[in-house]
Image 1 (cartoon, helix red, strand yellow):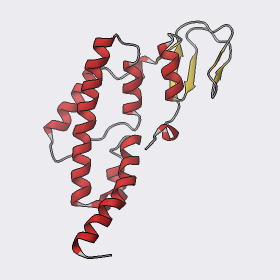
Image 2 (cartoon, rainbow, N blue to C red):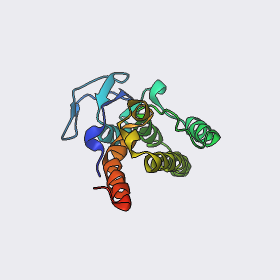
Image 3 (cartoon, rainbow, N blue to C red):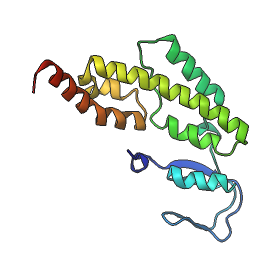
Amino acid sequence: MGFSYLMPSVRAVLTRDVDGGVNLGIISIAPAKAGSVINAPPNVLEVLIKRGVASLLDEDKVGSEEILKRVWLENRAPSELRELPRDFYIRARLSMVSGDQKSVRIYAQQLRELAQLRLRKILTLLAVNPGIADSRDFLDKLTIEEEELVKSIAPIIKEFLNAVVGLQ
């Protein structure tokens, strides 16, 4: 299941002058000065960050402390799913791109822990009540990736439960 078509553009700031522009196939950046704000798809922005051409805006970065805080909050209420900003995973992934290998590994482990914790809660909620996938209150708590997952597996869970009890 690919999520790239769902991902909104992300704001970033150029970290150096781009005199000749940058052409990355699906997007081109015209000549611009360091400090200019751009909007780009996450996969393009990842390339720009790795090349040292761009960086997420400070207010959009998700630090390790923020992820650990989210893990703590999710653990604190085991039966309740906390709201997470829709682009949280996107910004978190882009925030870790420019780190050194050790910090990226630690950061990725923390992000995986959060995703797995939330996935466990989401699957439990869907198993108990697959109809929750139609609830805007529930969907508003999810990230873009989580919502797409819910929309794809909720019908399968409904079908399974109906087959088990003999309702078709």
